Image (tube, rainbow, N blue to C red):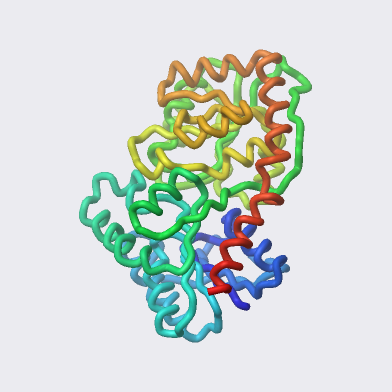
Length: 361
């Protein structure tokens, strides 16, 4: 059986899709992963599955999404597959029409609540277009899954189909990050998109004057503005841009504290369950995390994070708490215990179940 996974991301940096593709290939499926390529994209040549990256004239905005879906649709028409999986609403149109014309199955992986991302809060016209896509095509998919229980419940109720949960967890590594030199500056790391609402301005303010350094592994819409803002703050900040998954894992393991902050009223954020949460846990490092429902539930199972609101004073207080060896070591040990449960070795069984079910129909 052949599965084609489609996304608008640069596949070299997409941890979720790389893990999913490897797991499906390990289960015996013939896997093709399709994404985009930019002029500065690194080489991407996976060993266990095939990949293809589409070139486009446009790189962002409405013209990019229109062009990408058209190119993707025609590429799918000449590609053999048994099921095509649209990753988020921005590939759903191409996936739906290609599957419909070829009489094949359509799967949907909702990484987020796409029409409710912060970038669309004040863009009502564009938001309505994406809501139309979601409302008209999600109910027609054959199988659907999403990274968090809250989103799965919301989507199941809204679209009238069952959404399964496939959480975005890394492979098990069980590292312990007890600090060898507690007197040295605390190394904070943020990994992910550098966009509005990620708490990065608040983090820089909170860290100012404290014995810490900050590494930002990622890029996005506000990267240049954030760099300028950081120049005016008395804190050491290193901007690395996008980092490939293997390098990112090593980078997180060398850090002391992970950062997972969100500072908007976006429904997409409120229901989110970010892969970085589990990346930090697997590396054995405590984290400062936004106090949203999914994270509260997980932190009740294993206390691996200090949960905070989007408040500079509270973020600063959390950083200072983690400078105490007792607090740090307690959370780090909890990470080691949680990592034995929260890992892709276990979670991939939920993925296999989704595709085994769709092929039974």
